[in-house]
Structures are given as C-alpha cells and as structure tokens.
Length: 178
Image 1 (cartoon, one colour):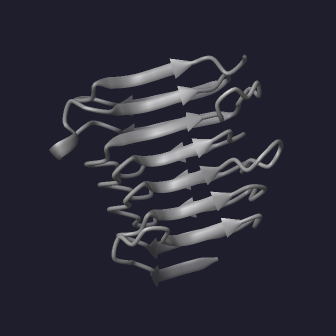
Image 2 (cartoon, rainbow, N blue to C red):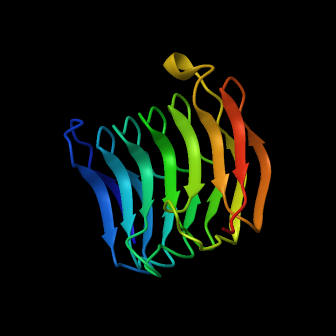
Image 3 (cartoon, rainbow, N blue to C red):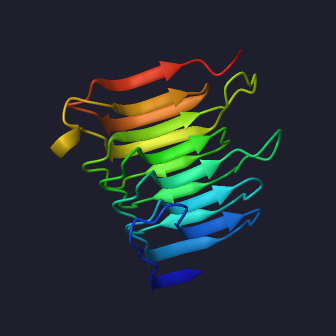
C-alpha cells in the first residue's frame, strides 16, 4: 500500500500522478497528486483496486480516470472512497465501462462535471454493480449552473444520498443495454 506521498505537478499535458496499468489488488492511501492531467489513471485489466483518502485536486482533465482499453479489459471491482478531486477541469471521476464500481464520499467542489459512469460509444455491454453514495456534486465557482452532477449510463446501480445542485443537469440516467 502506498501512503503519504506527494506527487504534485505543474499542470503539464500527459502527466499522471498515479498510473495503474494492468495492475490489480492495490491500495493507494493518502497520496497527493495535484496539478496533473489525471490524479489517478487506472487502465485496462486493473482490478480490485482501492483508492482512498487521496488529494487529487486541480486536474486539467479528470481527477480519477478508469480507462476501458478494449473488449473485456475494463477496470473491475474498484473502490473510490473519500478522495478529493476538487477543481477538475472536466470530471472529478470518469469511469469507462466499469463493473462493480463503488464511490463513497469525497470532495468535488469546483469540478466542471462531477462523476461520469459510461461505456464506449456503440458498445452493447451492460454495466452493473455501480454504487455511488454520500457525494455532493453541486456546481460552484466558475461551474455554477453548468455541467452535469452525475452522468450514469448503466443498469443495476445504487445511487444514495447524492446532491447535485446548481448544475445544468443534476442527474442524467441512461439504460445500460443496447
């Protein structure tokens, strides 16, 4: 388990604080990776990862990005808990085709958009096992009354105690099947 490390950058393009690439069963706790393009990037078959209590602010794209890299190579069984992804320029969390994704708590202040759980364009897979609980995805600062709080393109999801005030769209839901 990685703990108490500062990997902050200077908003350079193609910079990632933490990259898990086909790397499973990791626990990342109390890491700071501010001013990066991506605070944490989880690629392909990186399964059973726990990302907890990290500070990943001011990302120029996504605070946390779960990347689909082809058929059956999506990050599965990922747990994101109490991470600070404030002021991300695109999404605080952007998850492509995850299965059994759990997002609990966290700080999303000033993100252009809060959380997206989606699948690649044209894919017929059905996402499932998505749990999102106890998050405030409200629009603030320069993103007040713009963007999306929660974009969820999945079936079999459990969304509990989510707040998304001052957004153009608080919650966008789309079915998971084709």
